[in-house]
Length: 213
Image (cartoon, rainbow, N blue to C red; front, side, top):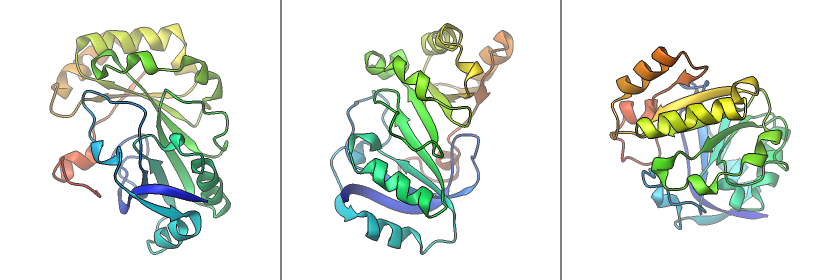
C-alpha cells in the first residue's frame, strides 16, 4: 500500500476557512491538469514511494491533528483513499485538496474536501466534472482561483447555475501576483455575491517559491 509522495511538512494552513491553523501537509505526486498559473509543478513527477505505515510514522513527530492531503492531484493515486481512511481512523482532522476533475464518491465522509473548480484563465476549464457536485457536503468548500474579470464573471455564473452557495462555503482566491486582490474584493462587494474572499497566507509570510511552507 504505497504512494508516491512529493513532500511532507509541517506549516500553517494558508487557505480555506481553516487558514491560520497549524497543519501537516502530505503532498502526493502526479497531476492530470496543467493549469497556466500552477504553483506546484514540482509535484508533477518528483517524489519517493512510501507506504502508509511510514507516512503515519513521519507525521506523528509533529504535535498536530490537522492534516491536508494535497498534490498535484492526490486522487490520481488509488491508495489515496486508503490513506484518508487511515488518517480518519487515527482521529486526525483531514482535509483533501482536489481539482474538480475527478470523482469524489469514494472519499470518506468525514474528510473536508476543498474542490478547486478551474476558471477559464487556467486553460483547464474543460476538465471540470460538474456531476461531482452531488458528492459535495456542507462541511466541504468549493474554491475558484480568479485571474481576471472573465474568471470572476464565469465563477459567479456557475455559483448561481448550480446553486453552489446552498451546498457549502464558496472561496474566491486571486491568482498570486497576476491580479490585484483589491479588484476581486471590489467586485464581490458591488455584486454582493455569497462567497468568502481569501489570500494564500503562506505566500505572504514566506517566499512564494519556497517549498515545504
